[in-house]
Structures are given as C-alpha cells and as structure tokens.
Amino acid sequence: MPKESSAPARDNASEPTAPPNGTLELQEYSQLRERYARTTSALASAAHDLKTPLAILNGYVEVLQSEKLGSLNERQQEVLRDMRSNGQRLQRYIQDFLSFSVLETGELRMKFESGNLNVCLSEVCRLWSPRFQERGLAMYFLANDKLPEFSFDAPKVERVISNLLENASKFTPSGGTVWLHAEPYMWERRTIAQPAVNQERRRRPLGQPNSVKISVSDTGPGIPPEYHLEIFDDFFRLPSTEKSEGMGLGLAIARRLVLGMGGKIWVESEGGSGCRFSFILPMKPPAGDSEGKKKND
Image (cartoon, rainbow, N blue to C red):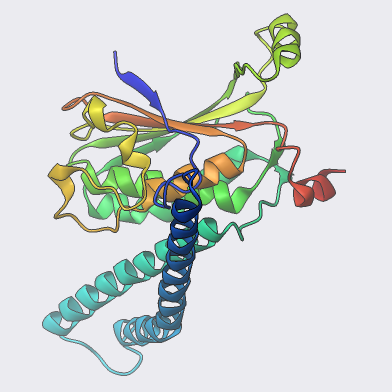
C-alpha cells in the first residue's frame, strides 16, 4: 500500500524560522525577514518586467508559424517550434515565480463562487491534452455525477490541478498513464483546540460528505517516502530530478493554494510504483474569507 504523508501546514516554508527570545537575536531575525522580503519583491519585479517582452516574442513566433508573412521550409518550422516551446517554458517559470511572490507576501485573495467542479476539471484536461499527446502519455478523467455544486475558487483549483498534471507529465515516461479523479469525501478533522467541534463532528453521520477529494495519479517512478513532506517545500527538487526543467515551485504553490482554500494536500507513493497526489477542498469556504462570504451570502 502506498504511504500517505500530509503536507505540513506551513505558509512560508522558505522564510526564516520562528524568532528567538533574545533581544539581539530578535533584531537580527527582523533584519533577516526584511531582507528576505526585499529580495522576494525585487525578484518579483524583475519577473514581471520580463513578462511583457516575452509575450511579444511569443506572439511574433506564432505569427511566423501561421505563415501569414510567407511560407516556411521544414527547417524553419522546426526552429520556430523550438523557439515557441522554450518561450512557453520561460513563460511558465515567470508565472510560477510571480505566483510564489504573491503567495509569499500574503496578497493573494480567494474568491469563492458556487460552481460545478466537473466543468472546471474538464477544462483543465482539455488544455493539457495536447501536451500529454506530444509526450506519448494517456490521460483519463471521468466526470463524477455524485459531485454536488459547492463554492470554490475555480481559477485557484485549476492552477493546483495544472501544477499536479505538469508534474505528472514531466516525470511519467512515454507510454505511461495519468488519471484525474474527484469524489465527495468525509473529512474528519481532529484538533485538540476545539473539543466541542470534535464532539459535534463525531455525532454527524459518516455518510454525509463535507468536502471533495481530488487526485492525480501516474505510472511514473514514484517518490521515496523520506521525501513525502519535503516535496512540497519551496524550490525543492528530488536529487534524482535536479537536472530536469523547472524551479521546484509547482508543488509548493499548489500546497499554499490548497491551504489558502482551507484544504489539505498530500502524496502517496513508494519508489518505483508511481504516485498519487491528492487534495481536499471543504464544501464550505473558510470562515475568514470575506470575499467568499460576499459571493455566497
């Protein structure tokens, strides 16, 4: 059986650790936090400045590929395909870092609206289908009629799923298979701080789902158990994948987004037997989300 490890509820895994007690240490900690914030802001600004010229370059490549400015020979088409592929890859890097910086500064706000999760997941699959075909991978998703309509942040959910699908497509060898699945789920949260809530929850029938569980499974090489927690850290990459493309932010961004929506994310895997990433979304938005309240009142 695959081993399950839940991602720790850390909002800033790469930030300096908790402040020490001493006055001098506290001052040094504050300076370190301030320097960290300035660095993150500067890098985010640089990434944002690259976004527009890169979009223009990618646009010109698309125009050339359309042959509206003249016909192309086979070699020219091959060069343009390489240019477009690398341009899109750089665009993903920039978007990842911009998302990371927004999450890091706490500026991202959730917007919960009632919707059909099947429609959301189907759209993500449609967008990713060409890339999976190019890599020789099969991707399967079957809409689940048992999923009720509930309030969720569709763009954020799509981003989480996209990051998980990108991770699966990157590490699953050609000829492999990836599955996307969603189902109603009874999430039994156990906390010491709220015993009254726990008692009420225990009295509730177990057959009444209070959340939705979404999973992405693959037939890739799997993830050793000792990395099941670290895999969600900022800029973390498995030793065996350090030479592959990416910044090591995809799963970290997914973790932060899921936590921001009041959910939980984890991985189940053993080396050599594929892996399954799952996350839970509560059907009732977090109480602290003001925008969600306005949308659903």
